[in-house]
Length: 83
Image 1 (cartoon, one colour):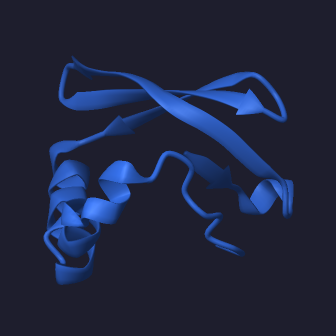
Image 2: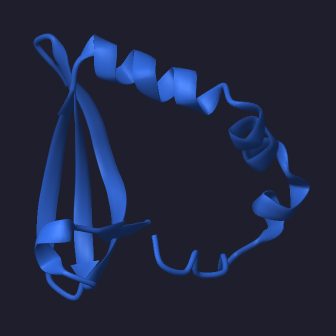
């Protein structure tokens, strides 16, 4: 998983999702950043946030990406360029 932040300029962070758990009215997603620093980032998602994510995932282009056989075989995806 790749991350970029406007506050860090063009710095690219590499990380992975390590946990997702419920805490009250939120889902807490924990991401371990491994390069270029070691951070744990947490995002608290409300029901409305999750509904927005699911609605975005229902787009034809996203469903096509998820169901693409190429994605299941691809061990190292190509870099997305400037995102």
